[in-house]
Length: 129
Image 1 (cartoon, rainbow, N blue to C red):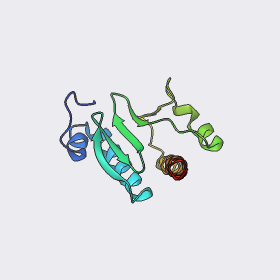
Image 2 (cartoon, helix red, strand yellow; image 1 turned 135 degrees about the vertical axis):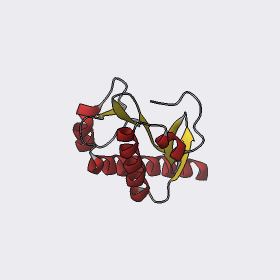
Image 3 (tube, rainbow, N blue to C red; image 1 turned 90 degrees about the vertical axis):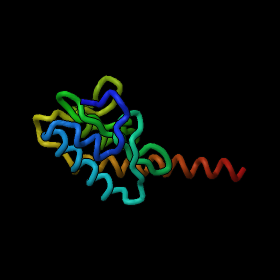
């Protein structure tokens, strides 16, 4: 489902997907925007993405699943809950035929925000040295 050429916008990316995937992507987009209101959106690597102090989340539609990238680390409870959705490289694959777990997505976004904030704080501390 990923377009072969760079989509002109996130709206264009979502519109180019089949209706079932497009509805999920639109709700993923809204959920991330609500959970991370300071994040900015753009197309990166031909996928919709949110950025805040770095890459917050990429999301994309595929033939039979929606992918969420990059892998989430550092929260044992969250990692356990994500285990059924992990792909070979740790990226997340949510099958299109089951309801998308939006509460889990909110937890992913919050964990990624915390991870990126920690990295930003370490970077600022290094600059002060």
